[in-house]
Image 1 (spheres, helix red, strand yellow):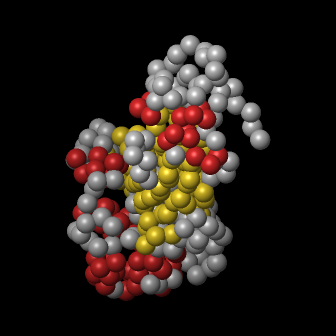
Image 2 (cartoon, rainbow, N blue to C red; image 1 turned 30 degrees about the horizontal axis):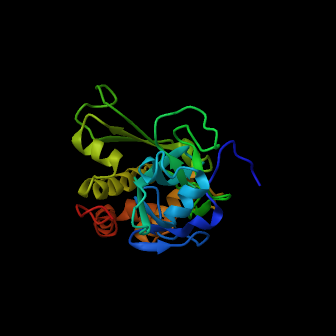
Length: 295
């Protein structure tokens, strides 16, 4: 048991509901295998908790100052692999109604695993130390779980490294929305080192991609990225496309994308690209929901 320098909520006054991860319209519970996820897919984490307001205020000593108005409930989503953090912060409901959270995570922002935590925090300006040991500093955690809920994303290396900045010309044309770099010399190298997407924040659609409101542009991006990867692999002779690649390698991740979007192995997708590129273009229109709303 961890001792805090201020009074915290009694365990029984906060009841947490296990969050769910929503991927392509399908909900997954913590610990379940998450299928259908890839680095170009936006995901959502939804959660809820119930707070016994009187019990919370009495156990923390915050009945009158600041009362419910100075307390917030938080659902925090962390991705250790990319060091990204997302949060939804809501006020407590005076009626005691269940609090609901929704965190939208844009494509390309996470990898490997998500950790979800609920917290109840003090949200008032710092005040003097109180004789009753009630919390007096903004951000003091009045309640938090001992362990996070975890979601393991299928395909550890399927993070899509994205850098967003304003394109100024040269190798980054000002009017381009994105630029993809793919080092294909060795498909056994880590995917995170081999592939990188640069997004132009000076372009309206680029900004939408970064903040997750891209709509049809996301489907265009998916198709474009996959076509660029396959086109580069289809140029010249290669003898490594049929081998088994280790998890997180460029070959393994791109192969998983070929299976997801083309129902092909990596070798089969590259051969199809060489023999009938028009067929690949058409198949990707369907599988990426080309020009449709972002899923």
